[in-house]
Length: 288
Length: 288
Image (cartoon, rainbow over all chains, first blue to last red; front, side, top):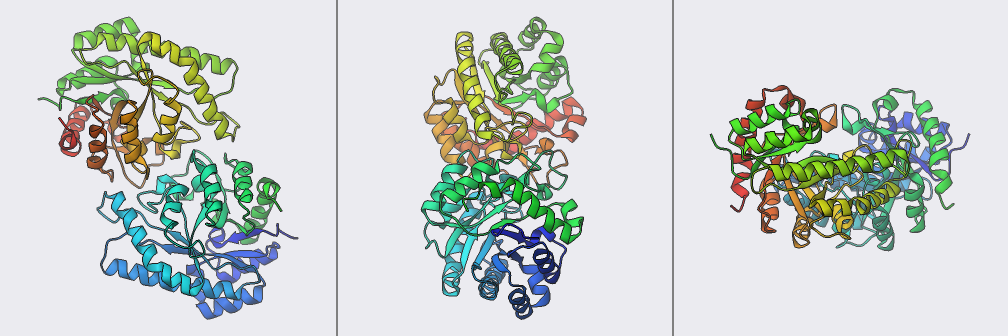
């Protein structure tokens, strides 16, 4: 069985799987690529993770995730910056261990409002500061930091970056090889400006990764877990995927689903169903 | 006891109250203004509602709500347009019955995706069509249609208009006295462009009403009911209110809270607590 050659299984889709189990699920379902997460990589250690990735023959499409650097200056901020520097190193090494075509891309979820704060403008300024501090580290490691705008329902608790346009504005001071953006259908499909901002992201060379999953209402009690397999919701994958492809993006397409039912299912079943729904709902709109 | 002179109790905050009960709660807590809802008005009939409003001495700040016209042409759409024309008439008559300073403003929640549709671009086009059809009716009745952008978490099931900028673009073809916008803190606070779009709304003469309530996480199981009293969440009422005031807006400020706990509390207590939290969190930022 072969999955689509551009499909990547983001590890968050099999969240409880170890790195070995995620690799097995991906390889078993015929994937060529995997998006790694920090926790399962750190659980085995980076050296071991490198060996496992190399032995798997999989490409690494992204490493998830850095960020969470909206707190003001102080020990907590220093710890976050230091941890992001570690994440940059992980990203570079995992991509080097992956099959040809692996991308040293670190996805950034920037963080919400600091505890007790109502100052979203200031939190956004702290994101810009963190990018300026991390960019030299990313550049020297050959890693692209991929700012991920999250759906505005997460603006205060997970990511004060809420639109693709805002992410591109934050990326603008930096070389596109160092700071790019993550385009995730779940987070951006509602945006009246999404198609023009995808085109802009392409013109500016900033699309570091394209992620897909679906959105449906009613949302579950924990809105973080409201993501669905492609085709099970209301997102128009045709227009969004065609817009991304029209920019010339030809990299892997990751499926990242936060959903308790998906997390509770056997990993091989999840990998297979992910590949099937990708083939039916997304693949027809890929340029090649 | 006197509430702030610019404070208006939107009837949705006392959702289970009859019109008589809502008027009593508002008058009893010293309010000068009320934002009416269609269902409780229709429950007593428009003639009676007019008399009650006139006898109350309250201003009518808005009438809520029209809209829900994203469906394609056909009987359902015709029924929606006809119902909106009725709502325009209600708005004109209630405002005329209210105390001096009443505003004939009909708030519009435009509707989500039609059943089975994934075409948000088309749904948005249907909104533009509906505005063009309703504008002459509003103009001849002296009513302002106030497009309300809703938080993007409602983009597919309640309102495909998600940002103030998008609402202003939709309003642009029409005279500002006929089509304006609703600025509701809960729906727009997260928007990186909110301050510049409020300024634009002011320049373009489009701010038909300003509504306030707070946002906090975690959201409740029904995300529609996630609104809070001002000061109980993370919204910065200072910057938003000052931005609205800086445009010269000097009308009523409505409090509209969808929250099961608020709806379950006695109406007089809700009116009082609304006035108190308005005084502490919003009033200090009003120009006058």
